[in-house]
Amino acid sequence: MTHSSVVIGGIDQIDRKILDLLVDNARISVTEISAKVGLSKTPCALRLQRLINDGYIEGFTAILSTKKLGLDHVAFAEVKLSDTKEKALTAFNVAVRKIKEVEECHMIAGRFDYLLKIRTSDIRKYREVLGEKISSLPNVASTSTSVAMDAIKESGR
Image 1 (cartoon, rainbow, N blue to C red):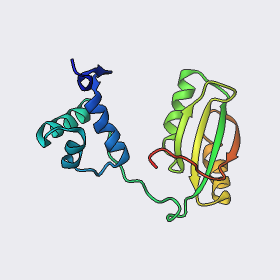
Image 2 (cartoon, rainbow, N blue to C red; image 1 turned 90 degrees about the vertical axis):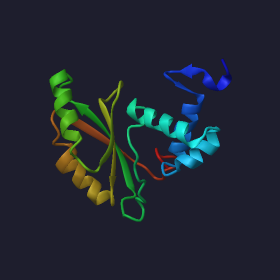
Image 3 (cartoon, rainbow, N blue to C red; image 1 turned 90 degrees about the horizontal axis):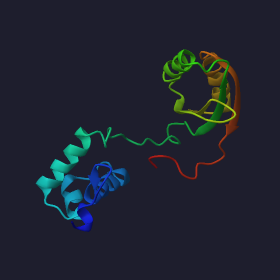
Image 4 (tube, rainbow, N blue to C red; image 1 turned 120 degrees about the vertical axis):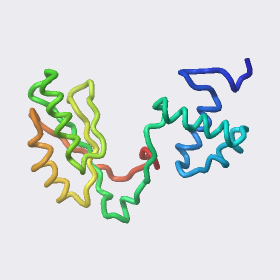
């Protein structure tokens, strides 16, 4: 068995290289991928399609300039719930997905229950989102906010 054919987690190193190339540039052509991984175009395209079909690639997206769109204010809200039974968690999860300003929501094991990444135009808009949307989510007992001063590394950037 050659080094490049070792399968880890259902995919081999060529598949991993394809994924790495796509993470770096989702618009890279199959021709470019095939040249960089050392396969001809057809087997490379088949691998890419298999990675999509098997769920390793969930989709492709555009990365927008939040600064140009006037959405460069980022705050992180720690959310503590009054009830953490499954029904309460589900109600919170369903409702928080509907708030467009919430870019990310993570359930946390720690002193609070959820960590939300919220992107708005400025602190006034954030305060509005916090007061009118986040604080009124099901079972929210309290929130605590930290405001990002600068983004050093963000997902997809």
